[in-house]
Length: 355
Image 1 (cartoon, rainbow, N blue to C red):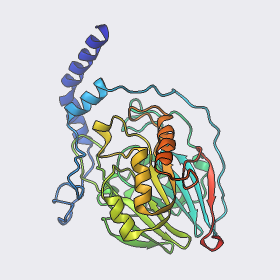
Image 2: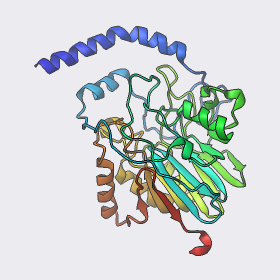
Image 3: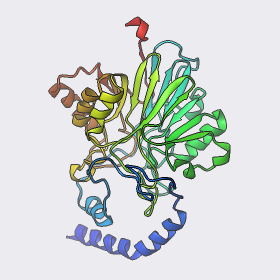
Image 4: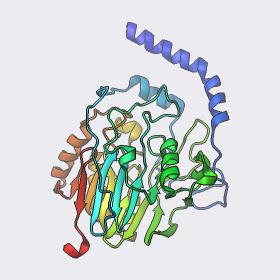
């Protein structure tokens, strides 16, 4: 009874503070995208092609946060940071899992970083919000020079502005992201970037890169939902095509991308942050859906990402790995074909010429 009273008190306090919070965050809200209308942009907001709803009301959010059955994560997981190849990888693909959706891809003599996140919290604030439970698998200063950064969307666990600023200052890479995203940069005038619409294709360091759809959404504040474009990336390297799914729910876009751009030598697919399904399903795949996507995309090999770093959703820290193992067995997919890496672990995928 006492617990319920405390929860009710917290709700009332939040309701009283909402007008002030809305006012403060509206002042801090970044500028959205302004451009011509399209089949996924109405002049103000972007949308997914299908009818799967990703928007959630404040009351739905409160229902989840106060009535959910959230597993307890450890406060901290002890781990040691690893070293990665500093020389340019000219043959094959070197793949290093750093944390969450941050992966170092070394291919064709080019160093590529996906959704780089070194922040302590996936939050706009340093004092509150989901806090990381382990060190990044590779220290920032141990990263080799980065040539290309791929950013899938603007959520705080994927679009970490301080990390992007540090990379830009250190290496001056080209940062690729969706329309409107440059408005989030701290040092926009000193940063090399390219905003992309779905289906846009650009050759960078002799690697053609296409930005494509994902089943997701965007928001940094309360009043900027879907004002910046989200998506996924297709890289056409000499070692084979690579697909970075970003953050996504399951939809027919996997089948479309597989038919249009596949098959793929390597796919980076999310496997975590999917519970409860009634709240997360349209925006986050679970491991069963990731394995289904692996098949539809035509992935020769897939790396599971988006897990084990920030306590964002209701499942336990180890549940994605358990559910992935079960999904692979049920779908008769080898764990060598759909695998995960330890934090900081590097895997070498053989050159096309060595097959």
